[in-house]
Amino acid sequence: ALGWAKFSTSPHRMKMVPLALLAAMAMHAVWNGLVMAPHTFEAGIALPIVSFLLFPLAFLTLFAIFQACLHSESRLIRRELQAEARDGTLPLEHASKIASWFERKQHASWTPKGVDGEEYLKAATRLAFRRNQRAARPDESYYAEEVARLRDRVRELLGGPPDESAGS
Image (cartoon, rainbow, N blue to C red; front, side, top):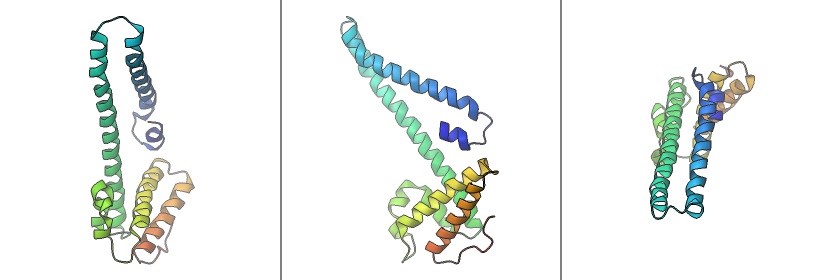
């Protein structure tokens, strides 16, 4: 939540930090309580059954949050790399492939011959995140410089010339 709030442009970003902290604390308290409750209370068989039912619920909740984060990151990567593709940095079809976990694993089948696929994926993914961070922090020159550097690196890996008008 802190990383999201730092680089988000959402008007709700500052509300999410304390809510995420409270949710994490509540899940931690429930987890500890469920582990310790059978040893602390004489509740018979009911408490272990409740614990047995709530542990999977807590796990599924965490798993759902994790999947939502991965989906959000995938959308961010696709959106930012599609913008780069429109500017000619990389082929348009690569934007959705780089954003897909499955396609990333199969990169040897779609990256051009002679391209270091692992390095290309890293540079393109980092470019997508830095573009998003630059949009949230336009006054910090680091992000603009990093976007230009990564853009040149992606072009270099694909065998194209670096951008002479760097800094855009």
